[in-house]
Length: 75
Picture 1 (cartoon, rainbow, N blue to C red):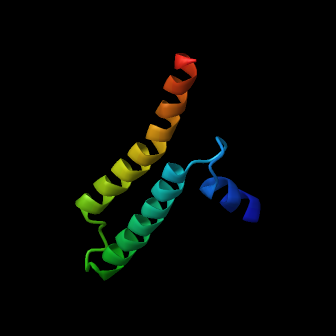
Picture 2: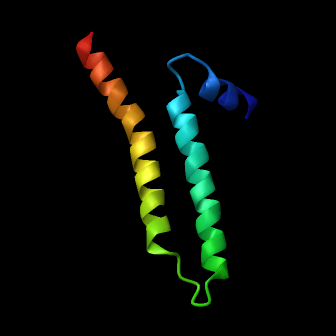
């Protein structure tokens, strides 16, 4: 676990800080969506929270992958 955290926050190409930020934001939105769902009397997750979870996870994690693809193509 310690090695993974070191790779996430290091400047090496293995893990990126964007990926770490996306993971933290995704975890925060999951917790907030769970709290909002538990507090709702119908036990339904608010649509805006589900949409934001999808956008943060897809955008934050997908952008680092796209960056790596185009970086290799330019060399």
